[in-house]
Amino acid sequence: MRTPDHEDPGHEGAGGDRPAARGRGGARRSGGRDTAGDAAVLTPREEEVLRLVADGPTNHDIAKALSISDATVKFHMSNILNKLHLENRAQAVAFAHRHGLTQEDTPPPEDPLAIK
Image 1 (tube, rainbow, N blue to C red):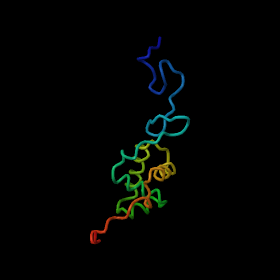
Image 2: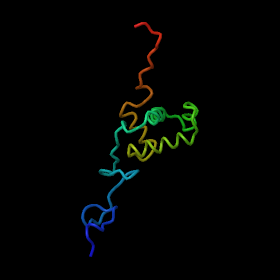
Image 3: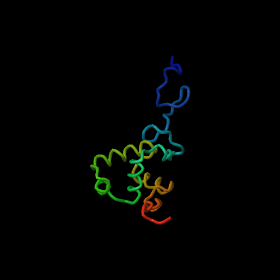
Image 4: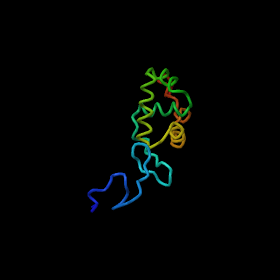
C-alpha cells in the first residue's frame, strides 16, 4: 500500500497520477508558460550580461565587450535562465525588454566633470 510519505517527488498532490509541470530549474509552470522570476535575484554581472544579450550580440561579442571568456558568458546565461525560470535566450531577451533591462533603458553614466 502506498502512503503519502512515499510519493514520487515528480507527482502532484496526495496519490496524484500526473507529473507536476515544471520549467527549467524545477520552476512550476502555469498553463504551459513559464512564470518568470524577479530580476532582483541576478548578480550585477548577470544583469549586465542580460542587458547586453537583449541588444542581440553573440556570446563571443559579449565576452569581448566584458573582457571575459565565451565560457563565462555561457555560464552567466545558464545562471540567468535558471534564476528567472526561463527556457532559452529568446525568453531572456523578452524578459529584459519587459523589465526595462536593455542598454537603451539604462541612463548614461553621470559625467563627473559636468557642472551642476
